[in-house]
Length: 209
Image (cartoon, rainbow, N blue to C red; front, side, top):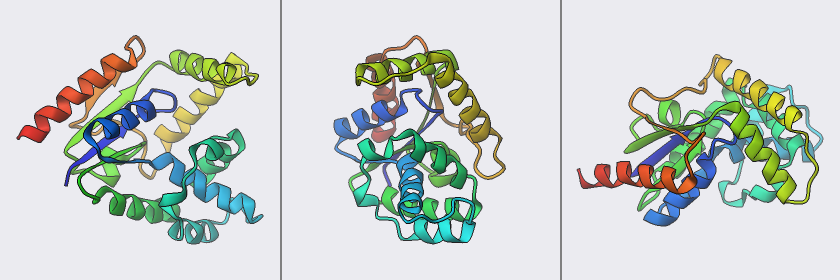
């Protein structure tokens, strides 16, 4: 099974890198964070509670991975709701099962998220952990919002990123951390081209073995 697992905190560049790698190798791509956002959106759309684990898990089990719209699911309110259900063990189990099924697709897959190399696909062909300083990640998110014509406050974004890091790294179930055998890519001062070149080198080597 040719699976590339890419983990890391918010706004580190793993999404851009993952899509680029999937395109380069003609692999299927799944942003696993969108599966949590899609579950949260379904709950919000139906007026269902965000604190009922059984209800959230039922929605997660019936999620269609083929209909994940990044533009719609990137809304801040959906992200906040997703972070609340993402700590629920039964929701995580349901979505991890769906993600593992996706990872088995041929000719190969690229999955990015928070626990791909450690929990979802511990036997992945290549594991990458993409990170950057909170300040750099906040600046990227800030610039991205402004470029899209939106209004943003850098300090608010930074606080939000630090809070999300603490929540992701501190949760009892599947905390955000590099797999022991993951290649670390710190993109604080690295361009996406440099990160892609490094990642491609790791993957090329693994595919030849």
